[in-house]
Length: 124
Image (cartoon, rainbow, N blue to C red; front, side):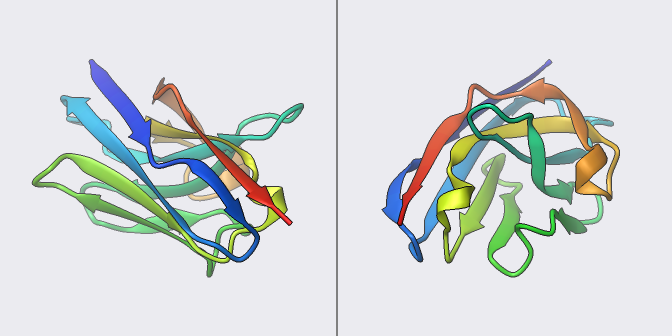
């Protein structure tokens, strides 16, 4: 079983930055793809960024490329999402997820394990 706990959300103005953190507990094992999704009010979940814990390869949604960076700290079992140049359209609940599928195309990503989410609000 995998447990995921996010932190680091908050409210920022457009152009600002936030770093989301996710504590990963339990055995990842073969569930080596982990990442971040988000869900804005009235919209479906969408993939934001993913990472292979085996190879370190990263994948990004087009909306995240050039602004967001996903990274991991294996020693601390942490996953991060550094978000720069935030825009009002980035406002959403952000979820850490494990055992992803559908990679590499963000529009097809799904996940079997989810955290509870952390809210990000970007004001103009």
